[in-house]
Length: 320
Image 1 (cartoon, rainbow, N blue to C red):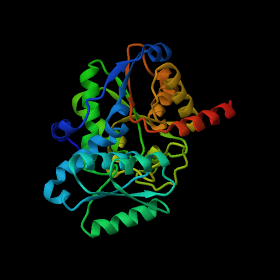
Image 2: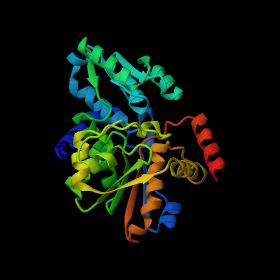
Image 3: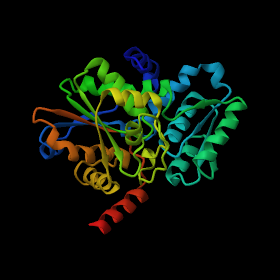
Image 4: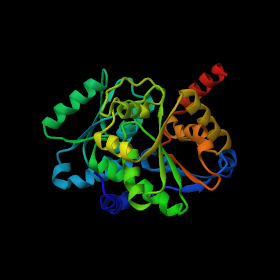
């Protein structure tokens, strides 16, 4: 499991390379939800998402000798961007295996940060190619099921609790489970009474299926949110959710898009669907939040392209 000491050590190690992202109260959402609401803007992190914290932690924990062999990672989105960014900062050779259906913006950004990208037919082929490169000597980095990645992710929760001493509830999106694992580990070690809520797309219920089965289950995700499209969750994340998750909320793609449009129109923010799922979930559970609650929404990333956002808005309008 991940200890508070692990997360604090990760914070110290990565601090020179990462941003302490802003957190702000949202009067509009506080009025709408009937309790105080804060937004943790992790979308302001380097490379546009929380993934950068864990990617730096994984790489720095390897040490210079290992990093000199180069790194390899599999990702269709934010982890690819994060590894590419971190590699550029640290002067490490990075090779990213991406499925060919990855968002064009993520492919371009990953290459733009200086990483070599190989497009493979699908995620299975991408993992197979990464395994080949790891066997040949590169250090493999995992997008979510890594102790170092999860400890790095937990730094976000340390910042939230520091900036929000009255915190009672936090909503976190779940893809592979690495983010919520780090958040649960940090929160329950410092403020065990705080309720941690998870949210997934209805069309990518990886944690929901695992919780129901009591074990890791492979799924075929179908949500528009590519960054919440993990085919399975990690075992540590599952264990922590089984023990500590207040509840798991499933939301539709249209609910996430509607929340995205709210942020754009009312908060001057452009978070990606994975991030706006937290608002969609908050609207579903607002009757379960007392008036004296202080709710934090973890706005985990902001890497949806302008074209994606325009397409989503068109889908929402057509569905209305």
